[in-house]
Amino acid sequence: TNIPRIVVLGAGYAGMMTTKRLTQQFAPEEAEITLVNKHNYHYQTTWLHEVAAGTIDVNRSRIMISDVINTRRVNFVQDMVKKIHPDKKQVELESGTLDYDYLVIGLGFEKATFGIPGMDEHAFSIQTVDKSRMIRDHIEYQFSRYKTEENPSDDMLTIIVGGAGFTGIEFVGELAERIPVLCKKYDIPRNRVKIINIEAAPSILPGFDQELLEYAKDSLSRRGIDFLTSTMIKEVKKDAVIVGDEKEEIKCGTFVWTGGVQANRIVGESGFELTKGKVNVDQTLRAPGYEDVFVLGDCAWVMNKDTETPYPPTAQIAIQEADVCAHNIRTLIFGGTLQEFFFDNKGTVASLGGGEAMGTIFDGHQLYGLQAKMMKHVIDDRYLFMLGGPALVLKKGKFRPF
Ligand code: FAD
Image (cartoon, rainbow, N blue to C red):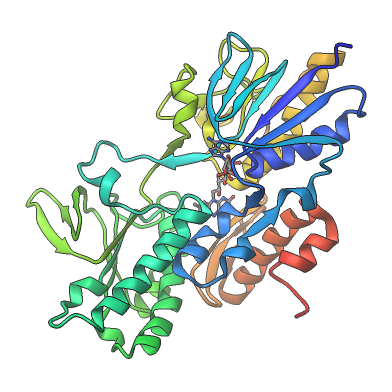
């Protein structure tokens, strides 16, 4: 029999929702669906700043794939994708190969270093569950070390976060909550610890409304975050960053880079054309030159036809792309009209730690403080509901009755 083989790479927002939608679009005898991921769990990338700061437990951000995907219906392969051979329609895994008729790439992002010396070797990044847990442990280790060294320098306790985009700001917000807890645990006065956010642009949160970013800056400054804007990071060392034209050195014990992301390197290494680190997909979400390869989420740029600029990749977009992708694969197999992607902006809310948050909802209405925080929880729980129904909301949701 010639059942079409659909292979989905990566179980992030894009991969999980596409797999889910494919199981709804196709009867079991109509298509063979395979999902490949390096872990047996899916994680909430949008919660990783909390894992990295240590304000939520690692397991809270993970969901077992078999809990939300019917593994009798979907062939789940736990393996590492090494390379894609689009001309052979084949995926190379660590332990074998997979042939496909239709491919969905949802392998997510990795740190973009822009060639800044030392960034690869010395910067942490909030990228995966494992890397985020490492940041949490490293920060705590510095506190622990401070208490045992003979002449400890306060620099050991300095945390520098490079980048004041969404991730950088959400992360320092969590640190503002976490550091007082660590200070208490290790008997260290709070004023010994510095948290510095460094941003090359003149303001934090480029792209956000002025009122929102001022609210964020006030809230974070009040809770002990220092901001250095219009400041370029020139080099990263083991225990310092070098900034500005004067090459000023700022010592630190921890440096976390949130200043840039690009597509998983496998995409470029497999020969897909990259523009600013990602694949420019067409409106039907396919890679240029390949009618059978869809690229979703943080691996892709999708053009906003109204503004002629690409949408900034977010979880919200990745989730919405899944619908169009699943529909278009069905169309390619059974005929019909291909759908074009249009982003339905439901709003953006950034958490700032504790009860603090700010953002806009779909009509541009601004929200602050607890109200914004509640909206953030609604957004998170809505995704969990889409993925795993009420049971998953009860188990992993932010509004829990216990
Ligand atoms: P991911 O969710 O990163 O998933 C990629 C998957 O691929 C992972 O499961 C990974 O294990 C797997 N994988 C990678 N390499 C391989 C390999 N070689 N072999 C097998 N599997 C592999 N967006 C919002 O909309 N709202 C927010 O509030 C928000 N907050 C954020 C906060 C933080 C701290 C960060 C880092 C991002 C945030 N974002 C937010 C952005 C959002 O998380 C990303 O846009 C989204 O995760 C992209 O989804 P994805 O499916 O492309 O990739």
